Picture 1 (cartoon, rainbow over the protein chains, first blue to last red):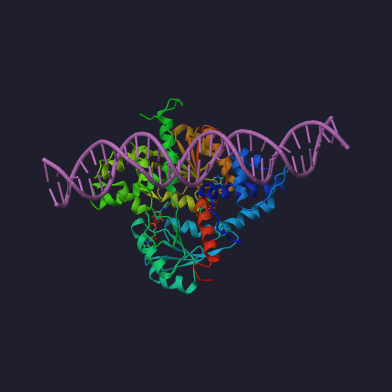
Picture 2: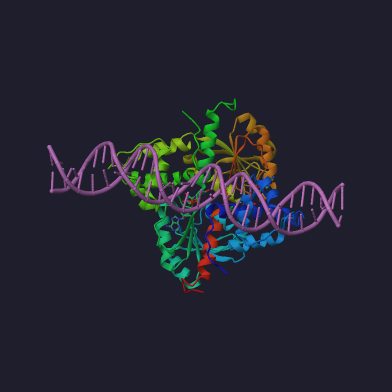
Amino acid sequence: MSHTSYVSEATLRRLPTYLHLLRTHHQQGAEQVSCSAIGKELRLDPTQVRKDLEVTGSVGRPRIGFPVADLIEAIETFLGWNNVHDAFLAGAGNLGYALLGYDRLKDYGVHIVAAFDNDPRKIGTEVHGRQVLPIGRLESLVQRMHVRIGIITVPADHAQTVADRMVAGGILAIWNFAPVSLRLPQHIIVQNEELYYSLAALSRQVGDRLRSPREKGG
Amino acid sequence: MSHTSYVSEATLRRLPTYLHLLRTHHQQGAEQVSCSAIGKELRLDPTQVRKDLEVTGSVGRPRIGFPVADLIEAIETFLGWNNVHDAFLAGAGNLGYALLGYDRLKDYGVHIVAAFDNDPRKIGTEVHGRQVLPIGRLESLVQRMHVRIGIITVPADHAQTVADRMVAGGILAIWNFAPVSLRLPQHIIVQNEELYYSLAALSRQVGDRLRSPREKGG
DNA sequence: ATTTTATCGAGAATTATTTCTCGATTGAAA
DNA sequence: TTTCAATCGAGAAATAATTCTCGATAAAAT
Ligand SMILES: NC(=O)c1ccc[n+]([C@@H]2O[C@H](COP(=O)([O-])OP(=O)(O)OC[C@H]3O[C@@H](n4cnc5c(N)ncnc54)[C@H](O)[C@@H]3O)[C@@H](O)[C@H]2O)c1
Ligand SMILES: NC(=O)c1ccc[n+]([C@@H]2O[C@H](COP(=O)([O-])OP(=O)(O)OC[C@H]3O[C@@H](n4cnc5c(N)ncnc54)[C@H](O)[C@@H]3O)[C@@H](O)[C@H]2O)c1
């Protein structure tokens, strides 16, 4: 049932967008939705949408489209967002605080159970109801509590050390917010969350637009 | 000089990663770096790296590679990260607070000059040295101060309203953190920052790994 | 001075992704 | 009942991205 069939990253990146749109439709009482309608709203080719949805195993009906509720369920299942995994967060700073306060994260399959830091002033405190523990205990607690996911929100120059601890404890996956490329064993699943990706696209376009004469501002 | 030549999104997403790596090399005193070396560190094909770097206009020398300092400069210039643009942030909540506290953001071409909120308890306060102003003033201030970039960190169901205000004020680009697809005029540059993209990949892989017998954990 | 080796840059080959085409299906309208 | 219009799903075609190949170049080794 899990036949790890290859799904392109592009598809994987579009699925959450469909999900958000579908949830909106669902709330508004829609029962069926067609790929053409989704495509129109998101400015995507309808065939593209259809091919993407295909990977979730949903089937649509000609002239009608797909049943919204089923489709939401199918995407969530496909992405694994129905199965929430416990996670540890390292670095209870600005960004860590925001993530700890983001309760919707469990809608995306992640539940942060504790935070770790190396700042004595933070250790022992609670952030959004979760304890801040000394970073030295990360490794053993990962092991003991079988935590699968580690979230790194420490400064870039500490990210590798923290990652090593997680790996030593037997973590399965790391979600890294620090702007470095971590050196990890092959079997560790990594996702680098790089704000910079979208900022790269954004600032480049802004620069282009300001230089080009299309707009007369300046 | 700006010849908006088309550069693939994939390339655009890899450039910041090169930049981070190059900065590390630079700090460690490296003067030249080859695409093969970069590729080995980031697990990318060397030709891929070479083609990516080509878009920045840098030229390398056979047997030697690229001059690190020049390359850093070239990537920054290409991405427009040398030209910092003022930005307004709407929604001084958890995430907004983190972004306001992230001073490195100006290394990526963005400088947040003020925040806006609709919560009377927040209005008038300062967050990381920036004033929180009433959301009602967003539109006119965008116009008056010629602010180019708007950052949306309000709840999803308020994102469209806030975006509309920004557009009405004449904003050029929107960096949206809310999980919705905004309906905007064609000429507005948008980047949706979706944590969900990487979470989609992460949780799917975690689910697969736990189901598959490769690892014996349960 | 000559050979060797690593790397660049350009273009070809390969692979992946997106878009197009078309027959089949289904509900609504004539 | 028959026709019509919208949409699905499958496969072909077109487009885009990645990887391979190879001649040129430049530094180091012989
Ligand atoms: N703030 C943002 O909006 C933002 C956005 C994108 C990326 N980031 C990245 O996220 C990371 C954190 O950013 P931030 O703004 O929250 O920084 P921050 O300084 O506010 O927080 C970092 C936290 O990590 C802790 N820490 C430092 N070294 C540690 C170690 N070895 N072990 C455990 N804890 C340690 C510090 O005590 C602090 O609490 C950085 O790498 C930054 O580049 C931040
Ligand atoms: N916290 C996170 O880590 C995180 C991560 C990813 C995405 N997001 C998204 O970012 C957005 C903000 O998340 P958050 O956790 O900071 O929420 P939050 O509730 O802490 O902050 C939202 C802020 O927006 C303000 N606000 C609400 N309506 C407004 C309006 N109409 N005009 C101006 N201000 C308004 C609120 O007063 C509050 O200060 C949400 O859309 C969320 O889905 C948050």
